[in-house]
Length: 246
Length: 246
Image (tube, rainbow over all chains, first blue to last red; front, side):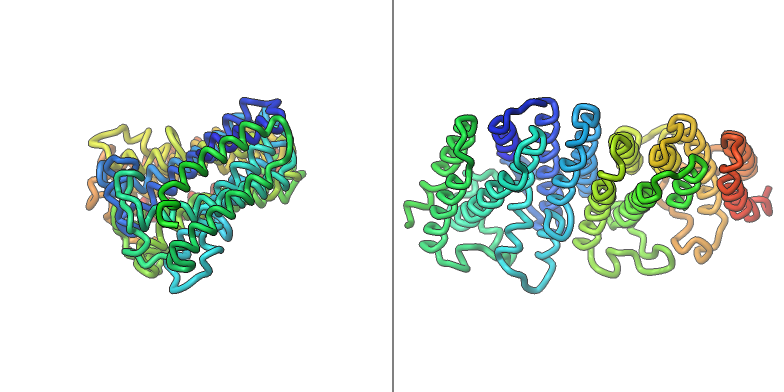
């Protein structure tokens, strides 16, 4: 999802350096995978299953799972380093976008850390935990192709918010098998969830509004057609399960 | 130790962009700290004490310790991103040097992973676990100042080998208090140690040879005087405890 998003944005911006786009798209996915492996650890979610398979610590032990996460974070940055010559002056912005999405105060690590606090704002938590990588995907896709970083960043922020709401709804209503990971985790772990905050009907209404908002933010370019259809296709995937209860 | 080394090498190379040198020196230290926090975790060394204080997981819990390590890895790269404008074309080499020292197949993560394998070569393990950051410190110090990366890299490789031998000797003979961390860890964890491989006398002889070798590799420049005296000072710190038994 995230690398496709980065690639679609780069395409909309002309994609004049496809090697750079590919490297950044891979880098974003490595960060995402790192966060999944570490979040599944016994000291966090203690999740036995991921993508329908035993999670890394269950299959290979906790030590390997910590190192796999560490290694994936490093690999993400290494992947950018490997295209430094191709990147030229675009390397700095790409590196900043990647590092900000991963770290503190607004990235993955910060989002995960909020779970250790007694309370926090739902929107701040979602922005860091889920939104940061969507934001990086669109901002980085634009940066890789020399596009308008600030404008495309907004698309990612909005899409990330929609994705998090959809994930919250799924966590409460979907059977385990449809996500390839345990559901009901938020409730079990007393974690903030949009369904608690707004009720199920409210969350579904919010989701629909967020998807419309995202599509409206996509620049009106012929080259952005693929991206718009991608968001619409994802939206269809999100909404059916929710609509049944709306 | 590692940031001072990077700064001393940059100084020897003219240090024409001190902001860049400082950022890289900090980045190397962040990586080092990340590796300490994660290596101390219960699934690795389960070390209760570090730098004379409770280790991070003992003081703040395992979840926070995993995130502190992750956050420090990211902060390391973020620190480079923050000086991208100052770095210009030096950013690519600096980023590569940093990522290689942290990841696989030759960096910190790889070295730590070898401990999960049934057997491995002592020199390969040491090069990854300890040498990688010394190598990064000297190579990166040169890269930050536009110096000869390959030549200075050799100094770091040699110094890293000496440092590891010294650390191995300390692990077997020093009282806990002198290092601020538990000793005898290698034996307890069946970890390869130069003293096992060469005997104590052999390890001490090896250490002296390695220090001479390092000093000989330092380019004969007036500006390298501080670096040479730094290595000699460190060597004096290493050798006394060893000499008593040599």
